[in-house]
Amino acid sequence: VAIYEEALLVENGVHHGLDGLMVVACDEATQLSRLMARDGYVEADARARIAAQAPMADKIAAADWVVDTSGPLADTKKQLARIWEEILSQP
Image 1 (cartoon, rainbow, N blue to C red):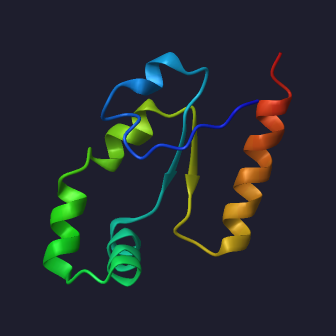
Image 2 (cartoon, rainbow, N blue to C red; image 1 turned 90 degrees about the vertical axis):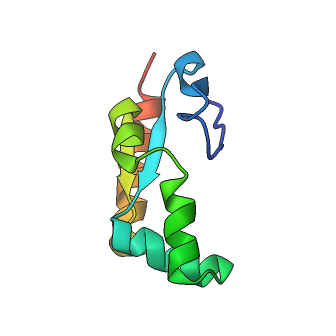
């Protein structure tokens, strides 16, 4: 198993050459607040950066697995553990 982390996989169509795609997603309000906290953006700048990306719905539609990180970290870890077991069980 090899994991390739890249922010623009779907935008650049790279995901078509992979055996599977995992998308990490959260609700828009969480995405906005995390971006502002992480990068120090004001809201308008954060919204502009999000708008410059492919819509989350497009990324989710392309995904084989989706990890919803809107909730507590424990929930994210449970999702990842389930997905990891599924990946390891594939021939």
